[in-house]
Amino acid sequence: MPDARFFTTADPLTVADIAALTGAEVVRGADAVIKTVAPLSQADRGAIAFLGDRRHLTALTGTGAGAVFVPADMVGRAPGGAAVLATRFPQAAWAMTATRLHPAIEADDTPGVHPRAELEDGVRLGAGVVIGAGARVGRGSVIGANTVIGPGVAIGRACRIGANVSIAFALIGDRVRIAAGGVIGEAGFGAAASAKGPVDIPQLGRVVIQDDVSIGAGTCIDRGAYGDTVIGEGSKLDNLVHIAHNVVLGRFCLLAAQVGISGSVVIGDGVMFGGQAGVGDHQTIGAGARIAGAAAVLSDVPPGETWSGYPARPLRRFLRETVWLAKQAKFRSKGTSDE
Image (cartoon, rainbow, N blue to C red):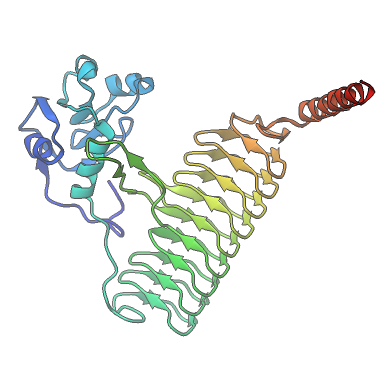
């Protein structure tokens, strides 16, 4: 269930209601009542899930969901105890249902600090700061001018938040530093195909930033699509870094400027990234690994290894290939000039 500090939960829907909303066809279980949405692996009897890719058939057959969206040719693979809706666009149908059941709590028009916000002793606020309903700021924290703290956000003690920062859907630990222009908790990029074009997938997770993290100017950290985006204790992010939804960054990691981490990447403790390095979605980078500047990681990186290049590969292999390529280019160039 999405965090009630950031999302409301609307009245339950029957499977027949959901079919009318999404255009899906009810195969069975029209009277089943659905209270929430969830991924296949996390769904219970009150939740609806979807099969978006055949790679997840095992998760479909083992799901505890009360209802599932599936393509028509996968109806027979749905678990017997679940209501079933058939559709060409399962993920889009799930997104429409999620939007209906769990709308985000929007900031109201209250200027300054909302009466229902909680500030501990010693909090200092710059000019133009806005703090939403239910937000909490810990003792001794400093919030810079024109920063906006959304409803329900929790900020720990002795934090330093710069000017023009936006924080929403986030839980932040103690002694965290966020430099000017940081954007924490906005929706990650996600869209699903539908008959009417791409549909935004609601991002129902949070950002969790642990103690003693430093976040550079202009850095963006997206909230999770369903679970959380997590920044581990003591990690340091340079300016203009982008962390996509559902990334789990370990403790004491170092990310130089303009690093980009795609969605659902898992990064172990003590990993270091050179400037402008990038990681493709759903990769795993082992503890203690080092990723060279401008490297493009498109596969899992074992713990402790150093990778470089495009696509990234182990450093010694990258250097051997670079030397070989340079020799080939020199040889061909010499051969051409002799002709």
